[in-house]
Image 1: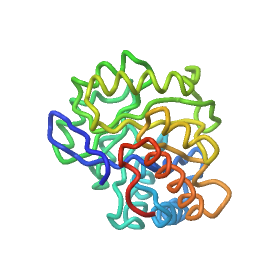
Image 2 (image 1 turned 90 degrees about the vertical axis):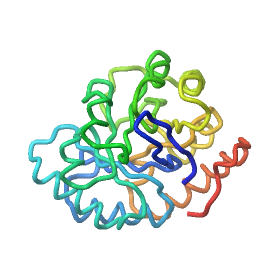
Image 3 (image 1 turned 180 degrees about the vertical axis):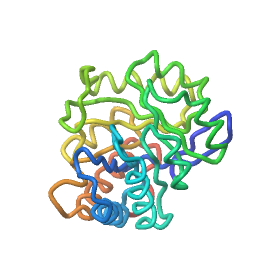
Image 4 (image 1 turned 120 degrees about the vertical axis):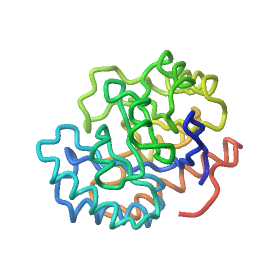
Length: 240
């Protein structure tokens, strides 16, 4: 793994370089399709996956989809669940990603234990300042750019805002704490996001829409790794 997140509960390695979000609102809810997309993304170089279903009407169906994704990935990369700690536990997922209004990270850590990955969405500098007190293993900053994949009432922070929030997150948690970026990121702007300080990008449509997921993953990983190497911190190592 590339980056290591330090938390009060222990040390959980997290590689944020290419973080694929399997969002049922964008990609649909067919378990076989989601599983196939996950497998292709990992084959192309995806380093982390998240199952995201913002309004779960059928928890049993969601659980079946998460299990199908995990089976398709076969432990090659961690699979996290957005918001729902209960589904992460039931599916045996590697962890959760939480928003600012979801279950508090302290409670999630208590339920999931020290070996789970817990991520957090950070939208402001103040929220980044608070990372020092939270038992999380990474944070994703955003939205960086405008996106159609999620109804976001907050304006995009842009590259300047991303850079400022990354700076404050580094002060709060140190240089080894993984900080990713999310929203509106694709092959055209991924390198600029990395140059602004992010350790990786979280993507949906740039990876999973329009076919050839494996090729898109390989292309994005190459751009991200090159940008990390150009930044000079040695995080762009490894091959897709």
